[in-house]
Length: 623
Image (cartoon, rainbow, N blue to C red; front, side, top):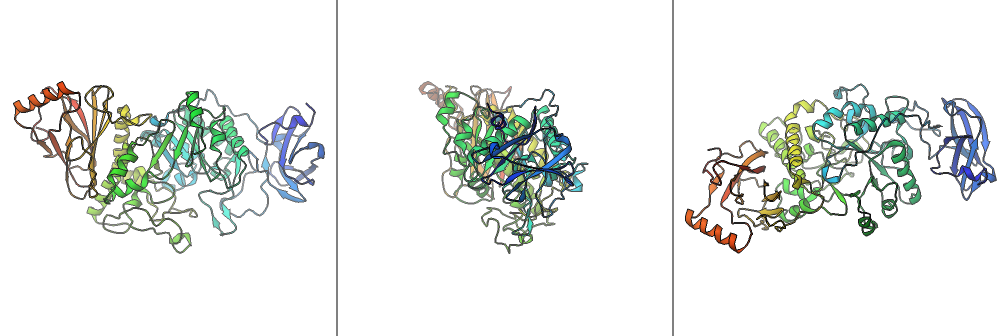
């Protein structure tokens, strides 16, 4: 290989080699080169033009000898104009957040001396994961967070105990690579960061220290030590080169040990990415999976790593929670949806749209602060304010809102996919009714951590749900559950019920249903009773195996479980005869023999527990 050709080694970032510092620039211009500065970016040291011998196609690569990488910064020039390196891995610190950038940002040369110790990616399965989406700045920017490094990667690390305590396994970060947050066209900030970025560098404004690369790596290492994962969001504008997307993801996997990527944009090369060997165990998620060759992935026989990430889950479920008609069938289908070839992320709130607290506190969006006269943000939020718009002092309304959030948690955890919550949803965070705060950097988008104590009951209930989901593997399957008795144990893996056992309510006016889950040859049965009507409903529970009885273990309504058991049996001899007859004819489940009163707007969970009294059931719960 010739001297110059040896410079063309991927990735095309500026990096230290055995012969100096290698620089790369992509341009079709013949007048281009490197401008070196001191490490602070204040004094120009020299200009080094690219020669024709440094060029292959529209790519220039040159190694500059006798340069101390730690002592310089640089930019490029093209046709006399200075430009930043789009593949820079770091930038000179000191740029103030939210301030317009008037000149190209000077880049630094990355020095790969980070001590990863014995770091290992956890490689968690989708079914064993619980995701948490956050904005790095907004998560701890408020003084109420109580952290030292507010609004930074280090600030997140200070809150890992909290995240671990609620069972979170995976942190998903909104864009946290470098981007210019000030938008010259709108003259406001792009707080979220969904715009073209400088994709090889962690965002300096999200770093408490002057070394965002080290700080970000420390966060990843701390997560991995806890068995937790990190997912990065990347937005790519239309027309962004497909090959470059691949190189960017490879770079972050190799250099930052990233576990997952949520890719956003309309031209995501999912077929290319899903076929790459280096990314074969890295989760890659998108809302478009049409081009993925799942047949080839099945032949690999690897764990699911492709993921579907869309907001289609939240709409029917939100409508059910607000007691809309005609949602039961769609909700049951969505809750069961769990493809064997790829994971899917389920959520009821996200950065775009209402938080869970706002979903139960506002009938309409309140985006006045965005400065677009209410034109921005969706008008279809499927929310209900529970009787009064916005904050209220009325205890009845406040209590109902808390109950509705618990209902939302419960229904989310019933979904067969991977559950995700948006930051602060675990303790009732509100964005004051703004469902599109893309340009707001203020307490509206910063978590108010005082809510963690104000709504601690919400957090505790969520913990109980996570524990219940972890206890029963049938709630965390890697495929769709069977609706037939494949184990010949008398119960299918999943079954649906209404006021009559073994029959789902399909009527348009229905707002209630029961779901029973079976595992371990019917040794473990769980029944979820969902009533989103404003009035109490009667739901039937199938008779559990002999020696077991239903026990209420969790409910969103404190009144649930009181005087709620009814006997529906015929005469004892006729019932025994009937059961023997059915057992002889087939192993299909016996008809229901008891029902439970489920309060209005309530979700309740029952377990089949062993009892010394066999299968007899009292008329009153608790007797």
